[in-house]
Amino acid sequence: MKAITYNKKSKKKFDIIELPKPKASEKQMIVKVVKSTLNSGDVVRMKMGLLDRKLPVTGSEFSGTVIYAGSEISNFKVGDDVYGYKPKSVHAEFIRVNNSDLLCRKPSNISHCEAAALPNGMLSALYFLKKAKISRGQKVLINGASGSVGTYMLQMLKYLGAEIHAVCGSQNVAMVKDLGAEVVFDYNQVNLKNLPHSYDVVLDAVGKASISDMANILMPHGRIVTVAFTFGIIWRQLLNVFYAKKLYAGIAKYTKEDFKSLNMLVENDLIKPFIQAEFDKQQMNEAFNIVSSGRKRGNIVLNLAS
Ligand SMILES: NC(=O)c1ccc[n+]([C@@H]2O[C@H](COP(=O)([O-])OP(=O)(O)OC[C@H]3O[C@@H](n4cnc5c(N)ncnc54)[C@H](OP(=O)(O)O)[C@@H]3O)[C@@H](O)[C@H]2O)c1
Image (tube, helix red, strand yellow):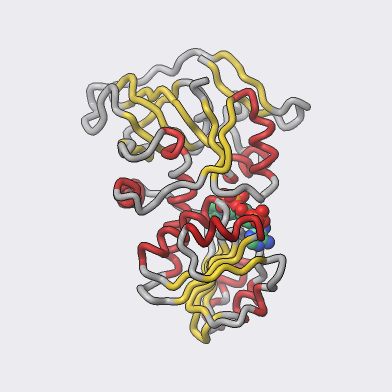
């Protein structure tokens, strides 16, 4: 089977290599991958050298069809269309999936292309929204609403009944309004710290806003939640007890329960991925350049069946 590997030192960066098809035990499944993505987490792992050292196959999200299910697998069967998340080595024609991995049956109202673009961004968005403890009618600002995490946060906030304001670049204003933001600020024209509003929660979905700028536009007991995870952020979070305006950050944890709940929202057309572009596996460098720019719109899908 074909798989995609990454080598930071090579000029080509990506190679399509031939590997033996994976084998699975009675407790495992084999999924034929149809679509995957290149997401910001994949690129962080590549740049930090966190891929498998011996066989650095890239990728983490997938959508495809079960072609083998061991006798101890009761919830999926051969022929099921599924989508899911594994932290590594997903950019291959076939992958081995454990019963403990994040996997859901693909709802019939979405394509494989849409399904592949869901797990990472939507599970991250939910993880951070839980930290924000948002209730109906609260006024929330999302900074960086046009990325993968931002577009899912927007749709979930709409479902939760929040009043949503958003910050994004000029080219994304229409898309962010379309996804449910009531008021959209273009960061080329307005500085976040000067926004004429007091928010219950400010969510930084891109991790680029300064904490003091966000605190400036919060209600006295408002919350800041950010996807950024730096030493300064961790330190400020540890000092929350001294501040009325609390800050929450962390490394997103994905659970099967959250995936199942979000899958129900997907089935009911309440969450849809925004897909900027789709590439074939021979075009990994183009996909990589977009994702590593930190300026992608929604998600970048890869066609692994081509
Ligand atoms: N802590 C965690 O566990 C965790 C989990 C998931 C993701 N993350 C991190 O979260 C970040 C976002 O991930 P993502 O996949 O959603 O990224 P993404 O898809 O690359 O989105 C970034 C978006 O933010 C916009 N943007 C860039 N600079 C901006 C700025 N200064 N102000 C407002 N918007 C800006 C970009 O649009 P423009 O072209 O308009 O600028 C782009 O649409 C990444 O750094 C990722 O590593 C962290």
